Image 1 (cartoon, rainbow, N blue to C red):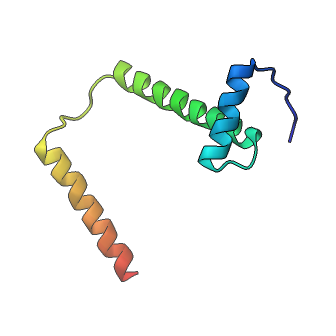
Image 2: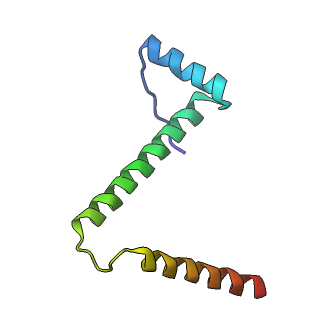
Image 3: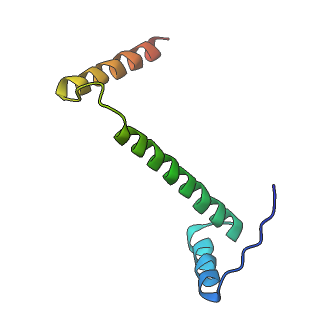
Length: 83
């Protein structure tokens, strides 16, 4: 694991310290790592949403589409319970 030093103004340092204490983090590094992971996930989701919005529709999404999905899940769950 690599080390990175970050300078924060006193107000932000106090905020980080409060979050560490109130939310059960062991260190400020754990808190910052979680923030970075959440930001990565947010950016990934944003990319997926933008790609989906830019793509052309392929299947009509109506009540029968969702019922088909539910049927597939039921069959899969049933097969998993038997195996």
